[in-house]
Image 1: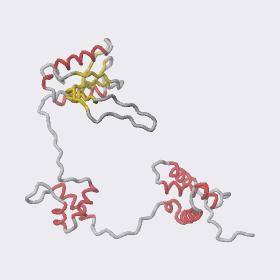
Image 2: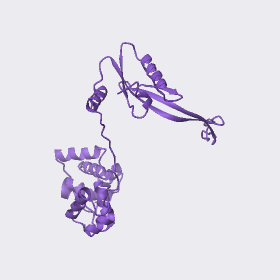
Image 3: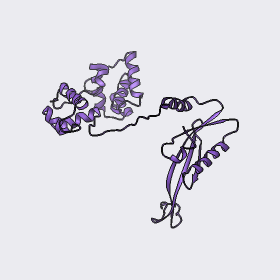
Image 4: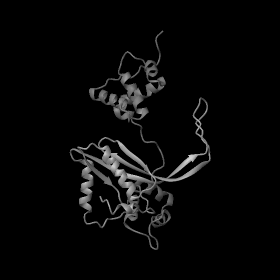
Length: 276
């Protein structure tokens, strides 16, 4: 008995179309729907395969194969891209959006330090939810203020060049370390030993703990190898810090010079002995 129904549309691909379809189907950044459509069309170009066989290979319904075969035959590659979904037309013009952005960046309201969504909405005759969406789209947050500090050090530029140079182009036959500390770490101890993890049972520890004061952690990162030299000290006095620097010097081969990139803003008691 002969099969009834409309014969499927024949798909013949050009070289550019095949390369583009294979690229979309293989690329990880492609949407899953687009990748599936590309695989369908590539298989449709094989004359020996039926729609049911293609659906089995791709993992979809035969009606889906017929739909995208027909869409590709009519519009080629453009037919595989999702068309814009119907919806309500925009009520806010691009000119209004542009003016809201300009007002936010270049002006301030009367009797206020910055615009709010409601004051901006009142100015332009729109809802404050719309203003909020526009600000969110452009990453505008008028209520937030970040701070920065300009150093008065006349040698700041030279110091920055030296520091960046150590990272980007370290000297030959030298070890460069980035040194920092974590002060006043609470030394806590549980009142009972830790119980190990067992099958069907999580690792357990007592809720109560005992304070043993604080401790200071010094760390030096070798920027070339990634190795870290660490040491725990009872406090962060200049004497303890000098001991840590001596430890770094002992662990570096004698034929290498030692360069240290150090932030000295907080521990003032180091300033009389060390500088950046």
